[in-house]
Image (cartoon, rainbow, N blue to C red; front, top):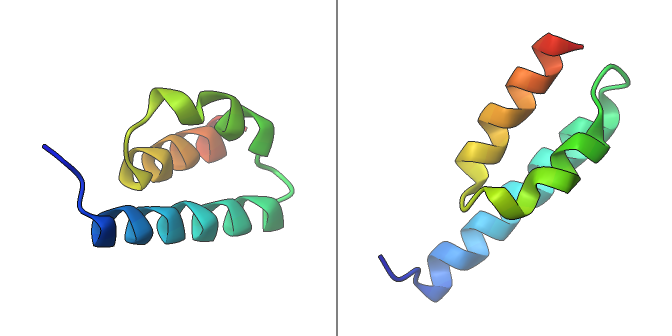
Length: 57
């Protein structure tokens, strides 16, 4: 499925919000998220990854 311009902007905002929340959580390894970013094609997947990481630490 081709991503529309609006979807792309929304996804980037989603990722920015996620990164902001991760940086505020001292128990979360933000580097892990950044390293795996290219493996995930949506912010929803990044969010799930973030939650998993949070529980693992």
